[in-house]
Image (cartoon, rainbow, N blue to C red; front, side, top):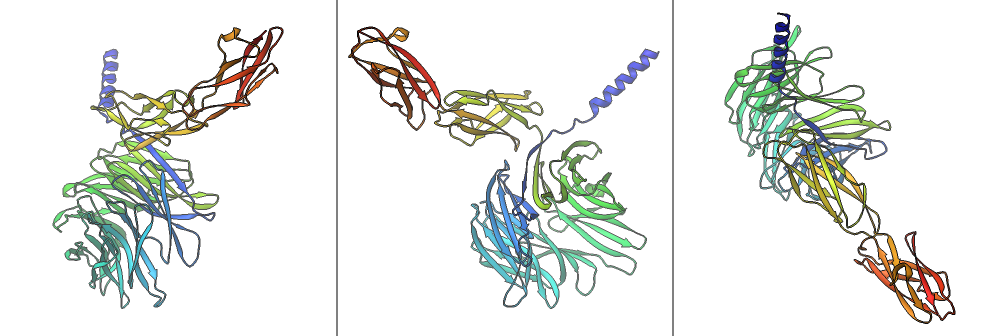
Length: 594
């Protein structure tokens, strides 16, 4: 009986293990830290284009009276493409990129003539060059959106008799104002755009402090409004977001002297009510959603206490777990990603609806000083942080890729002669799925040829390819990048020039020539030269056999010849001919005979 009980326990344990979902594979794709001046910089926001390039806006600590923007574009591998700077009165508050890679930013600028604010919109071309600057009087740009035609939409506020009304501007690709809408029925606090171009204005009703939000089409037409009425005992406030389908969610916070509670509401893009949750205790810090069945809130439940709450269709409560605070981002149907910090590191994790932790990652190579923005796009995690370098703030950005990814790429040799081949091995963090997995290749030099992509066979976790190289004239380090699922790993192989290998004469070791006649010698390299001739120095240890000072091995050649002139001798005279190239010396023996 004791053995049967032990066997039953073992089977139960195996069942639990097999029924538990395996943790998601996550690889840190890349991380970059920037500090534009010796006095540091303050990171502000980022956006990502359709190719996975990242645009980061920061504010340099340069002037007390002006903001010095610094904008960087990084490609999907985290490599810096360009850096641009801009002076303005205010810091960037909104940014977006169109289908052609043109970048738009909005903020405010103090007009010199009136000392009042103007909504500032700036367009940078895809190559980083400044295209145009437009100011709209008495405005403040807070959010920006682009459409498929390259038009730009700016949402913000318009100051009218001391009231910050809602503002929507439309600019052509050339910076011409196509449409302007001012909403005089709402005192605006914040705005954001949904993916379909609709503008959500969050504020309060004019004449009181009761919360009100409006949804406008990109043309400025009102879609719908929602509001609550504050009373002497209840104070309401809205926290809003939208999902990829432009459904709008808001947390309706109810605060009283005895505590706080909230409800979550969901409306579709046309303003039709979909669902709401029941009331739960806590003060909402952030709300994030991915689709109408998955909305999450970060809730302050007490002094330095937080919880992540999740809601689905019909307002069903999906999740209630303790949290470290920080920021949250919905990850489609998979779960909720959270980012937090402690004294020494940033922490990232994902929890699904079954309250299983799918993965955790720690970024401890920087000194944490705040998490500013967290986004999840197609399960790729992007996070903008602030860190400290040398006692001053710096911009830190990190990207994580979920799924199978590369953990390393290793060459068979770290240094080879140009013209030879080298094997490159990629190690994955898991086996390739059914159908295989593409590994994309890139090098920073045409001297090392790589295929565009190679498929790792299904069920395999290692891929090895052979890279062909070209001859080089000088030592050339080549950076090789292997990209898998948007994450990359790099290695370096140094290509070396050919070296001097031999100097020979007809007859080999017993070569001889009759004094007074000539004999032709051959310089031999270990491989062909590249684009430049290689000058080989020559010398002889006897006046009975003279050689030219040097001989050149022409581009692309492995050998060169030279002539030895001799004089008559009365006895066999041994001669040593020496050839020298790049510090390497080789010799050949020659006999001058009578």
